[in-house]
Image (cartoon, rainbow, N blue to C red; front, side, top):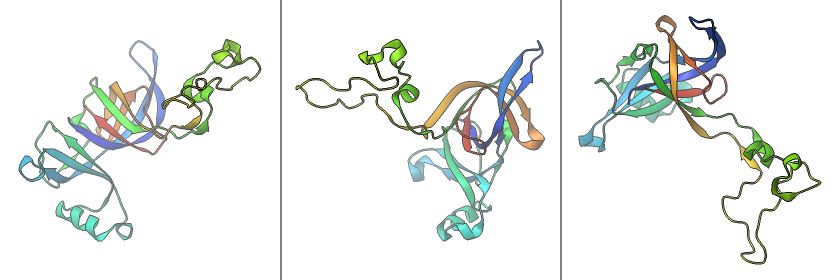
Length: 205
């Protein structure tokens, strides 16, 4: 599956040919350098390792510097492997946003925004006392009953309760590419993608 590493710039909206306002996300996609070529004979599988976003040399380990030196490039902040890449690439090749075309559909993966410790209404969509969720009558956002009686005398694993929310790996599938701005390495994708602005995302076709 071909793809690129990118950075989420932010959201905007554009008008289509019918005058409809479409919300969209702008992503800086690449250019990415091929930093390693995995082969079945050596690694047991075939994949391309791509690097994105230059990293300061003094913040890199000697091992990392040696690894990227083989590809003839500086150290990179983000490295991702892509299996079953559509085109054959060599070590040190540069892959840019031109691998995408307007109108095609892509999957975008990123780390969702962290929201901290949240209650059951925000985290799981409980209705609260207005909808009499779980039978409580005088506590607006309480979780209600969480366990059984004297048997089994415990709370089952997976019970929906309050806790840390967000910060998960999320993949949004089948987002349409509205525009490809090749000279600025930008993709305009319909809809929203996970992550805060300036976070890394992985775009797969």
